Image (cartoon, rainbow, N blue to C red; front, side, top):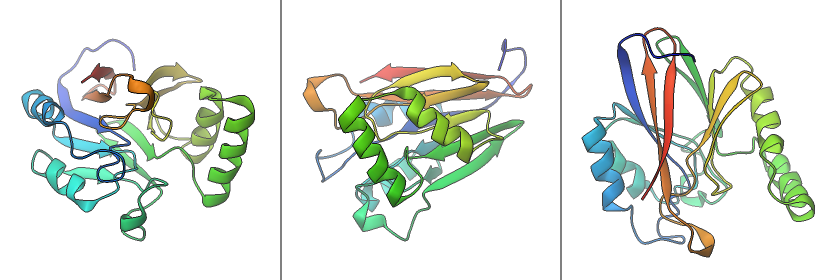
Length: 188
């Protein structure tokens, strides 16, 4: 994940926590426009989709790879909790931010006691995806782009549901032939 020195293989749109019909009305049209303009070839959704319509709208732009979030009651049984994909030489782990119901409950207790801690999520996800170069997650609604213990962690934040009036955000990940990546978080 060093300098970009080879040809672009794929541009990937990264979203999470859309909460459509749960806490938001629809996907922001600006998000769809940016993905089209960037010519994304794949979209990763890190959960809390809430309705199949979100995936259908995103699939009009590019193929979608998604995982189940804690608010995805309508999609239960239709999506996995975690996925690992490979683009060129780059292995990408995708999860909402927890890996089981029990982990979700334990995280709630830790969050109540200690607040948000990036390392708490990173440690769990690193154990789930030990071979991944990039780990994409959501759940927290807090945008993160960090290199930590040899991996790139990307949480795009929430693109249509953000408590407290803070900005909406999403991510773009570019994968190159030499195994390098370039990632950014963008505001809506």
